Amino acid sequence: MEFYGCLQKTLSNEILIAVHVTPNASQSCLLGYDQWTKNLKIAVRAKAEGGRANNAVLHVIAELLGVPKNDISIVAGQKSRTKKIMISGNDIQLIKKALSRSLG
Image (cartoon, rainbow, N blue to C red):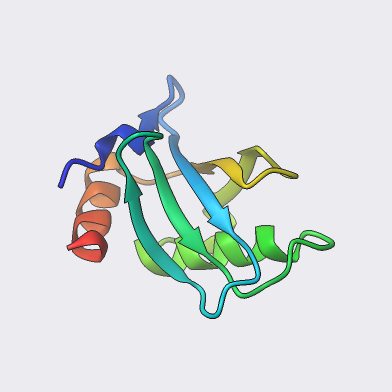
């Protein structure tokens, strides 16, 4: 499966991941990859109120990729379902491997 379209590497060596979030879901998990919008699809149990869903997305991504939550931040889409997540201090190849394992 070709999911690399959701990943970008910045000039300062951070990694950007495009995600589409479904808040208020029955469970928090990675749903898959949308090849048309080039977004990872992530569901979270938290409601989109007071930043709870945003925190839940960061937690899911940290668990999924095995990176510290402190290295992850939302850089675009704070109040939107479509977001750009920035990961600092990690190698893009390790991120690709973690996503490959998760997406099967």
